[in-house]
Each structure stands twice: as C-alpha cells, then as structure tokens.
Length: 231
Image 1: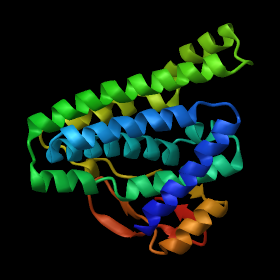
Image 2: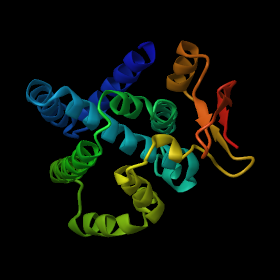
Image 3: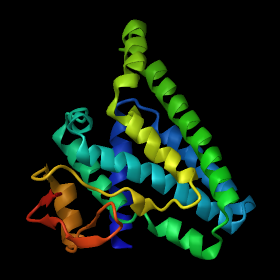
C-alpha cells in the first residue's frame, strides 16, 4: 500500500510539472478520472477487474521494454525523469500478475477477458492519440513537418516493435499468464537506478521486486545498493 501511495504521489508531482510547462495533463487526468468513476458505477465488478488486468499487461510490457532496451532508455534524456520511469517500470514488472491472478480466481471467463482487452486497447490508443494531438496543438513550438516526421518514425520506435506487438497479442491466448514473459536481459546486463525517487522506493520496500524468468519461477530480489542487476 505504501508503495502504491508513493507511486501516486510521484506521478501527481510529475504531471503537475508537465502542466506548468503547458502540457494538458490536468485535462487528461480529469477525463481519465471521470471515465473510471463512470465505470465503477455501471460496470460489473468482474469487468472492472478485467480492465485492471488488461491495463497491467500493457504497463508491464512497456515497463520491461524500458528495462531491457537501451534505445527506450535513451529517449528519456533527463536523469530525474529516467529515474522515475525506471522505478515505475520495476514496480509494474513486480506485480504484473496480481490483478490477472485475482481475475482468474474470481471469474476466469476467457471471453470477457478477451473482449475487455480489445475495448481497453481501443480506448488506450484513442486516449494516447488525443493527448498527443492536444500537446502538439497547444505547443507553440510545434512544426508541422517535424511532427509528421516524428509520427512516421514511430515504426522504428522501441515501443512498437514486432516483439512488443507479439507480447500484447499473447493476452488473447486461452492459456495466457503474465509470467509467460519474464524480465531478463543478456548476461551481465545492468540497469542503474539513481535519483531520490528510486532511493525512496527502495527504503519503503527493501525487498525490491523479484525477477521472473520465462518459466515463471521467482528468484531472489535483484535490487541492492541502488542498482538492479538482471541476468
């Protein structure tokens, strides 16, 4: 609970900093909160749980891209921001199976899981497109040609690789489980964690996240002295 509370606090502070720079994070937060509030009132509990499980699959997939792909980390060229997102990524990878396991225990309905994943994907991509468009429109420094070039370059982005698509689509398998995909890098790979966000998280939860291998076995925590060595 303390970890999640700290998570929310740091992201609120980050979003507020972006808002002060002119990005529409307050508007996005309000729309997101409204949508979640409506869903909590009208959707069955098992559907709400399926939504959480679907979103956790997205966040865990993208988190592990950040942890294992140097190109993704290089896109975060501000040390404090990179530290925040690495910390977030480790946290998401740590508990990526929790909501899914609860859903399987409470319902386990494959049709609902697949349908909710499809609806979540449409909503998530639509929300990202809307937020990105608003940011571009509100940014006086935006140049149309540069914006078009950046959109075109998305096909080479580490977030849109074939492997990422494969992992997202795996969620539709009947026998899918989040631990089918583990957190790993080649032997000797290291993700350095620096900054107050990471340090405070380590202090709050000294166990750190367990590293999950492809076979789903949890091994000893991989965090010590402010660095996570993943092998």
